[in-house]
Image 1 (cartoon, rainbow, N blue to C red):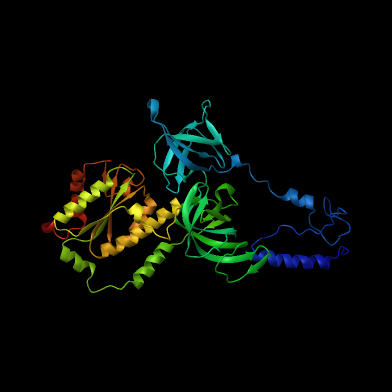
Image 2: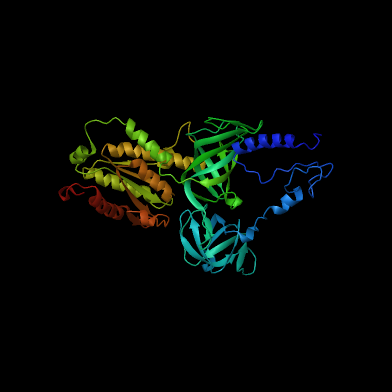
Length: 454
């Protein structure tokens, strides 16, 4: 229609290059064609002598084919861990779907983000003959030579392969479909592979109105039907790949109020020391107005330093009975102690509470940490029990309670953070026996003088 004119093509090319540059897309070819006449479709057309580039077919042939999924690095997101107790079956089967790569019995594996290591001892399948290998696309299970303790959501990889990124921050592109805009300082739920974690929007880098393909500058929120490049921060470390490397572990969705509100892709990890939790604590400490009665004066008055005692472990392991017995013993010995009970039920309550298990657990930890900071700042020995807390949530609790001491008593033999615990007790330990051991721990960490030992 334009007579194959070079100036028209160059004008179109200039306009598109400007637009593509805004969304950081670099084209490999600009090909002037006439589809009806077949010009530059298969071979170069004599009607466009000024164009010396590839035809459509030549350009397509020039692209490199993506490697088959079975030839990529091994990625196996853990969906669940099954343990059988009947008929002397002591297997622990790590189940899920192989998203990429392949693996064989005897291969060394490593889990992310925990970085725990083991070796494949068997490939498991329901009603199948013994398997020695698993490939991308298979839903299967594995047993390990050395037993490790992890939660669903971790990604199993071959130790010799290139590892995924592990971080709490990443840069990603997101298409937002939520009724309410994506905003900063609100906690959402992120789902990436089998990982479910709280996430916040840390920064909006750029926004594109998908309905008009127009770039919007200096926008701090992401409205419905916007495409945005953002920095996201998760409240605990996650494992992921760039979408260009392994798409299956580089895609994510964001849940808002039980609905999928956005879908996105991971562009790159972001490694920064500053986190939203640290920023929150910095703002809290800056705004905190204290009296002249400092922690040292309180410790001298009460003859002990303050501390948070967290009794952690699985449900129904006797944690609360031990906590109550400890409070009573400390009270009778004249110590300034308090047991904060039913934390899991009352924390994060009220109108603002979320019924989402992932977000509710985060709110519990956050509120427990804030309450602990107040009460330990007042000089108390605060005692609480929390069920099924993981090592990252435990670390967040310690950070929120800082600079006051946090002591962890692991009740029930949970292997997830056994090394991080200050004291490990078997499940359903006799409360008085447990109290004696905890008092030895307290005398070591919070007594000012042996004369005032508990």
